[in-house]
Image 1 (cartoon, each protein chain N blue to C red):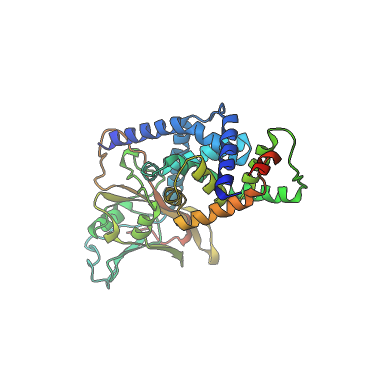
Image 2: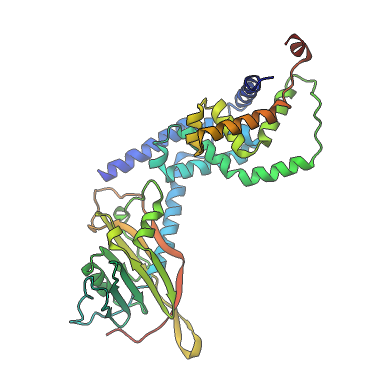
Length: 169
Length: 233
């Protein structure tokens, strides 16, 4: 029955939305660093998910699809922000307070090119392997490896390791 | 420091960051998301509907004029307000000069194998008649069914490929009401546009509850200025 199918589809999407929306919001919030922007991006990404629900529901990682879409929507904003940050003076010295290294690294993750950022998030937060990440992003598995390697190389300089730990290594 | 070390640090950082915003929740209800999609589809459908309506008014079907020769591709049936002709490849070429006699155009198209419903107002089909959009590449089907459309020389022309229309699908062709405007050389002109929406060919709801999906073409970028011809016969 078509009407039943439509109702089921809507119910299915609503369940997915209710279960996934906060997780997606929080991940995008971390990635973009702005609460309202994250809300707008995720809402638009879910809107597109509903518009293409027959495709998205069969996706191996629908939440990853939503987050990827939200981050893609953020590309232009992200590029502007990267330019703004590049124009500002940054102090690369390791902060003294305990929370600072994370902030520095988080800021560096936010400055990554969007594709590298997506790979990091899908691999780390969604725990997708290279094949699933490639499928979610529509790129080759080898390309995932390249983006990951480049992202880690860029982030390496931002990781603060306490002197005592370095000495012991 | 190896890649694994960096990855571990990145993982810890992201997990800590997510934990720090764990209490944040989406303020947008699911109903708003669903409504957004419905509104967008309706907007597009109306724009599209406003578009073809203009294309079809025409005519008066002349008794005995009959349908143009099914498939010989050489002898179009020329009517006062529109012309329908079968091209050598099987495509149905529709040329509209005036918005008259939608029923005649509908009959002509159906006689040529196109399950079309033609209207000259901004009517849209009942929601239950909408054919749901394909999951992938929703507009490719429309592009195959309507491979060409253009307007020139005071007329709107579009081609329908009947072979590209899957079995349950019908075409809802709308032509927008013309708006008379001053034209060149003292002639009146009309602004018209055409749109098409995929519906169920049966013309009946396949079930009791309205379906939600639909997709339409035409509309934006498909409007033209047509010279007003004389009244149809």
